[in-house]
Length: 192
Image 1 (cartoon, rainbow, N blue to C red):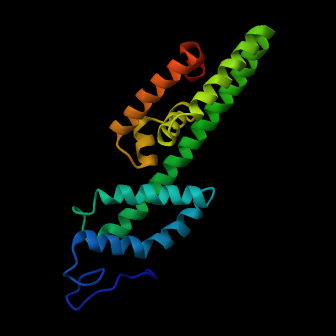
Image 2 (cartoon, one colour):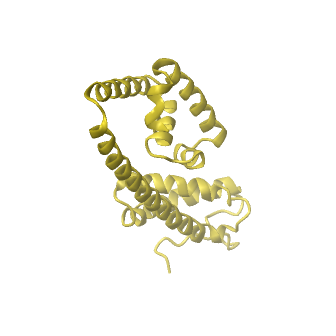
Image 3 (cartoon, rainbow, N blue to C red):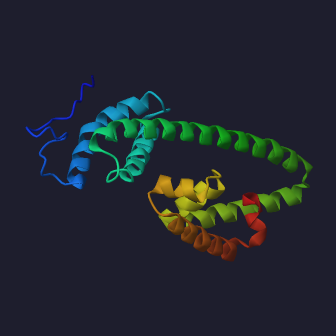
């Protein structure tokens, strides 16, 4: 039996007074479970920030079931979602590390094959691109970096940032337009 057994009223309703609405019950549930969920996730992720990210994403995903799932199933669903989200994060991190290693290996080979003037021009394009990215508004900058530097999909970015896929697409479209205008298409090659 869980140490955090939901309170029941005389009518047997979990999470308090039977007159509470589903959103009020859900808020109470989140308040009750959040600390325990973070402790659970800290043991399954590489740190507090990752645990908080996974917890937030898990709660957002659980929100979809708030109206359709019985209150008594919320905890089981939350932990199943959290485990799946932690596994997704782990797989994404492994994929990103493999991609970064491949790029580093290819980049090293490409850099050694370049003539010194080509290498210097490439470094200048990268510096202009880096500067242009840093000048983007914070949300657009984050979306562009998650997409191009970490290789995340639009759906993954939307979940991570807590926005819709349409919003991610808007930020990417506007961000790319600004970057192309500021640095030109040739400087965008590192992202292709």
